[in-house]
Image 1: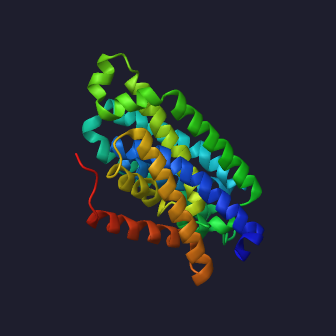
Image 2: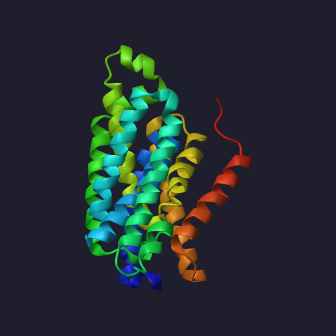
Image 3: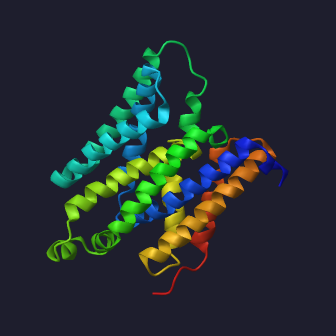
Length: 266
């Protein structure tokens, strides 16, 4: 418990808990709506926002948030209008975001040593101001999911039936992808954009195999995310290894363990 006496560890634990709540909620919607590939595109496109922030000398998290939401809206529009070419277009936006980020960083005078923390995560470097922004995003995401929960539920399990019942599926589809973008921005500080998809999908996948409703899936997924984050932080501190990689290593081992254990009964 001595490690909790350090302010950086307190900030890391708070950031991990905030990210876990959002991963549990949004990750469940990502898994049941089968939009993991889109989430990957958003995560990697967000690197363009990181590069833009470094080039302009502005705070990374706010700039990346705006950039990522814009990229998410573009992907949402594409997936609504041309479903047959979704994979191609998302792949192009995925690559374009990464390329833009690298080019902008190349144009930034000097070399910034914090750059790697956005690739592989640096939860131990989270500041109080980062926490406040993450908390604001968490409240916004949680509130929107709560307000539109019934619509998300209908859309997730039968889109055509939901349309027939008057559910605004197109609006909810766009809203969900924007929420994924906000979620990605939060998790980048925890595990980095390269590993962000793992934390967004592994806990919900394990939870889906052992729950029978979307609400219980979100709760179990959140609990698993908290467990993986705390265990990963402890391993990171004990073994002096990268925190984001340690968190994902714990999640991945749990994923394979869950595959050999029996799931829920039909």
